[in-house]
Amino acid sequence: MAAVTLLETLDLSKNFEGLQAVQNVELRIPTGEIRAVIGPNGAGKTSLVSLISGRLRPTAGTVRFKGEDISRLPAWDRVNRGIVYTFQVTSLYANLTCYENVALAVQRRMMGGLLDRLILGENRITQGTELALSQVGLTEDTHRRAGDLPYGHQRLLEVAMGLALEPELLILDEPTQGLALDEITNFCELIRAISKRATVLLIEHNMSVVLELAERITVMDRGMVIAEGTPTEIEQNVDVQRAYLGTDAAA
Amino acid sequence: MNRRISGKVLALHLGIIVLLLVAQFVLSPYHHTNVARIMVFATFALGYNILLGYTGLLSLGHAMFFASGIYGAGLTVFYFQFGAIEAFATGVLSSLVLGLVFGLIAIRTSGVSFLIVTLMFAQAAFLSILYFNEITLGDQGIVISQVLQPFELWGTEYPFSDPSVKYNAALLLFGVTFIICIALVYSPVGRVLVAIRENEARTRMLGYNTYKYKLVSLVISATLSGAAGAMYALLFSYIGSTFASIQYSIFPLLWTLVGGMGTLIGPVLGTGLMFYLVDISSGLTESHLIVVGVVLVGLVLWFPKGVMGTIREKWLTWLP
Image (cartoon, rainbow over all chains, first blue to last red; front, top):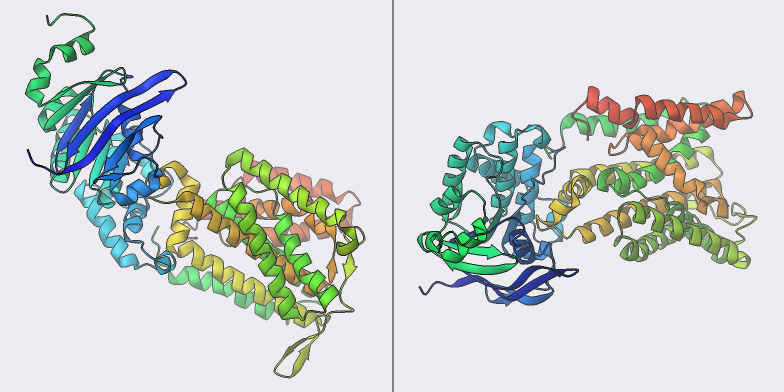
């Protein structure tokens, strides 16, 4: 496959006072792919995407985005370059309306020079906000307080905020956690729709979601990548089964 | 909430300015001077509220910005015979620079450490004023009314000893500040500041350099506080180290909390209420601070969001 590499990590490591959360991870994600990262709890998945999004600084190694070394850039700068992270534990502005939550993301995308900081066409912001809210199906909740939404809708709002930033790489950290079954089905459709415009990096525990969505899967265990391949390859991989079951059952 | 400023919001806030403009013709001389003083202090509170109410940063050091305005204006009048405009500009500029330099250091901290850093710097500023006593005359203070030339505009002289000059200069400062605050709250920057107050980590992950925004907020807050200080020095002609003491850091906090932080009218109302509360209770009893204390306890118990905060929550949800 001659696809252009969007994101690349080289020898990426992160230590937390002796704990090797991420060890020498080499990851390469081509533009347009839906990539899932799976692994047992504590495997280092969230740490890995935190290194990519800039919420953590690496102990060693580099992160390259569109060919550029971004390892030293602060998180907010990476967002502006197109790497958007949606939180595992929903992190919304609970006291603000859904409109305001998304408008903050839309505004960021539209803000350019100094003048924009003082006056910015609210019409354009409203348009972008309403679009993002309708994409995730939250139009009816536009003027509700984000904190008053049911949990599933809060997750959707989180995604709407990500979408409104028009990311090139959208990192979804366990997006279906805590969702009901029918909500998960809708969510999968939504992610598929998003992937037409953005590369998606998905951390997910729900294997049926992973198998349905991911084009390739990266498996992590104890901070290391232990396997990578198509869903079929991963399902049959002995190391993966061992990591998940903790036995040699597959042998 | 929609960002477009609504007609009733504009009418209400501009109405307050108009009300104050008209009030000078009906107020007794005593209240006339009081209201002029309140408007200067309200400007201080408005500046403070930008940082506390709209950005979520609690400062215990705003006395240094107020004092830098006072000394910037007062000392240049005293030593260099600056006119009112030049002196005012110097006061504003010195608080702006102080806010910027201080902010570059202090904004790296947040929460309790920010509070402590502001407190420490303000104490250092207070002690510096006393230390350089030969220049500042900080311990006994300076009266500048003998030196300050009347303000001249189109051939007419306006002496600051004239109560109506005092009142209208204070009103001008207050009105401009009030309008700046309304514009800021409704601007894209204002939206980001509120976002920082509500959830800073999320705001960073939306691509905002929150350090820069907090710095901007602090500089605006410091500059407005300094403008209040500079005007205070010119109108009431006394400058002294008291204005740099911890008391003057607590006042704007108190005024803002009483009126309702994160509301535009709150700090103004809070300043007025506290001023008259102290004024009336000190007329009734020697230990007037007990009365003030009781009122504050009551406020915390029944109006934890301040007067305007409670009103907004219960009745007028459209208030900014």
